[in-house]
Length: 276
Image (cartoon, rainbow, N blue to C red):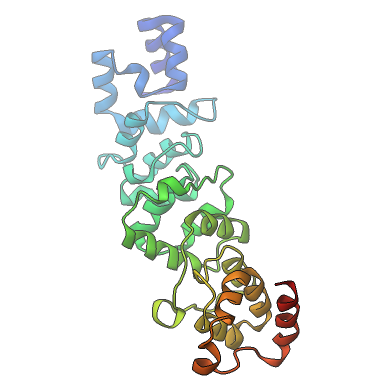
């Protein structure tokens, strides 16, 4: 089996039309030619390892089901399946259709579509933001995260994904912000619902900006920020100004909590009072 012999046979069977299809769809194009298809199927290892490297075009366009069959074929060596994978265009595949031994290769080479379903399904393969997934999301040009797709998952899946995403320092800030802004979820009480583990100052700013840090202003969040992210206390107060003022106007606040304003925040509180 070599490229010249196979291409000559292809031209003999179907002329220029089939030969053109073969150059772009080396598996799909020959399926309707019974004897040739059987011969190729019986010799897939040789066919792929010898034919595909000789093809001049960078990418092929086999039907996706044919591509998944090749990538998941246990009869083919990992090396041969990688040869085939390299010829698939970027952002073409769905990760849930690819078996484990090829999945990370497909992810690293950006053959998987970088959309909501593939991001979340890939996340749940390892139940975390594993390094290859972080790099994939950070560097994919076709990144596309949609709220309506995310909303279709079970509540417990959405909550876990949200919390792990909020704690993911590895995501680039623009990706981090876009995902959180589309998720539209919040922590209610930090002390009972989340331990924030060494989130960077930039990430904390985004958690506040997207209103992911809390649904409304609350003292537990304020005290958490005072203790761990002092630079963002004023940002938190500004972002949650309406519920902050509503909270302040509650007649029981002083009795129950004492003076909630620290000295360095009183100037800002006074300025807010003057605008009301």
